[in-house]
Amino acid sequence: MTMSRLVIAMLLLNILIAAGGLAMNIMLFRSGGAMLASQRGEMVFTEAQEYEFYPVEKIIVSLRNDGRERYFVLDLMLLAKRSDTPKRFEPVEPIVRNSVVSYLSGLKFDELRSLQIAELQARLEEAVRTDFNNKRIAMPFEQVLVSKLIVQ
Picture 1: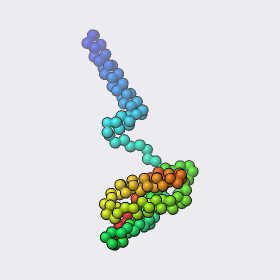
Picture 2 (picture 1 turned 90 degrees about the vertical axis):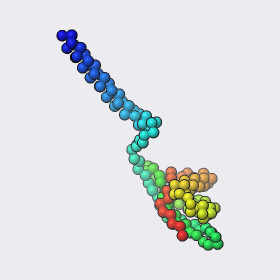
Picture 3 (picture 1 turned 180 degrees about the horizontal axis):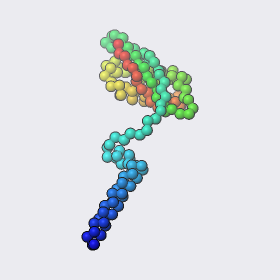
Picture 4 (picture 1 turned 180 degrees about the vertical axis):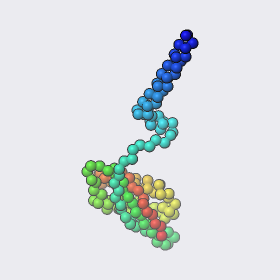
């Protein structure tokens, strides 16, 4: 009889340990398991947010290169998180165009041509943000995305 009691006790102990491990996994998953995963360097995906986009098309910049005119044509997209109140992008489009043309006009053709899209996008976003801050105007968007780039 003592052997069967020992087997039953071991069985109950194993069930309790397995149930405790399961409960701990569920708690970690619900309350910060994603945070622990991100600390370990694993990719963690959150819920997708809804965004609004506003196109700023055909920004044309001409630059001189070895006595020859070169043209850059850019199409941008302004990205903002969707909210209950619709954002108005139209009033700020001229400021965005002016900021982009002013910034790109100061660059040399070879420098502009050698930029990766991500770097160009970051520089344009910084130039636009600086202009909005200098003019003390609230930006109704969060990011400037380059959607088209043509070099002639």
